[in-house]
Length: 216
Image (cartoon, rainbow, N blue to C red; front, side, top):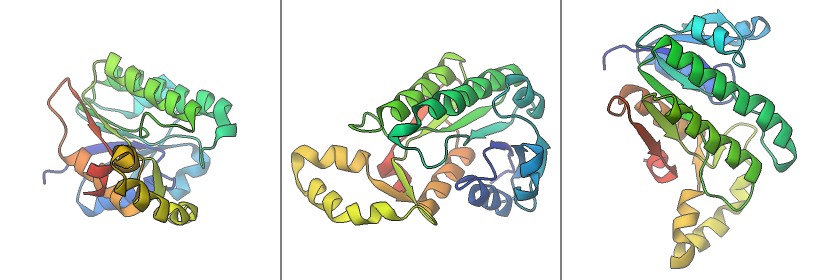
């Protein structure tokens, strides 16, 4: 696979660190936008770029034409009580990233969204859906990866729901929702993001990757 210039926001976080490590292992050139205090957490082999993921100019200055931008910034451990954080962090950051990406003429924007529609977490789902619309309106070639919950270190509690998922998938009326809102592992998520980086959609289009495809 030809090496790609990849810029990651949120590259020091839960999904970001293993993703950056995997991209480097696959010989891609990776730059991570991070605040000064977080640069020490940038995985070895990546280039730390000091910047503010909530600021359009800061993001644009870190990008070059032809880059792939992977946007992972978001509120940690999202929950129903965090609607204000979703608006002030998740939405502000994706708007800044989309504007910065358009200004810098990136080749591909990979955005971690969320499975939708969903019966819960309405504020979170609404912000992520708005993020997708913002990227599409900017005319960017993009991949929207839509997990529901990513299982991994510190994020294991939904395992208790697996019997309920199995039951729901066995009932035809519930099967589609159960699969769309299914759980994925951190390894599956990283693999899906790497595949997105390495196989972008046609120029000027947006592709959606749902839970069943993440699992594959």
